[in-house]
Image 1 (spheres, one colour):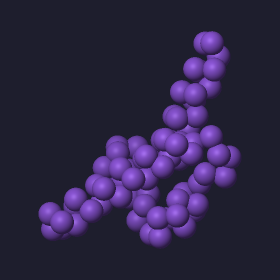
Image 2 (cartoon, rainbow, N blue to C red; image 1 turned 90 degrees about the vertical axis):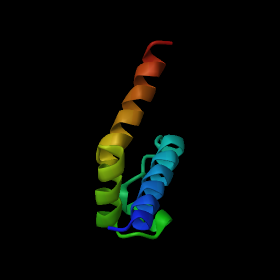
Image 3 (cartoon, one colour; image 1 turned 60 degrees about the horizontal axis):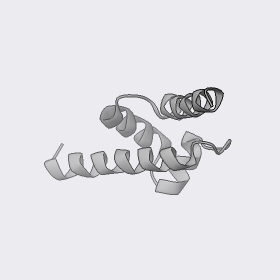
Image 4 (spheres, one colour; image 1 turned 45 degrees about the horizontal axis):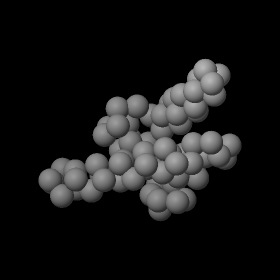
Length: 75
């Protein structure tokens, strides 16, 4: 893999994480929806996200939702 390809994939993973950070409360936020938004195959997004973020897309979304729920419960 070239250095440019690696950087491009890292940027994609960062963009997906940023999108999830903003839209995690949406009930229809799925890997399929992210695939449509970012115009990449769902498997490619899944593999790239896990490689650069260190966790899967679904787990990342669930973590964000749990953090929000815990925050609401402690208020």
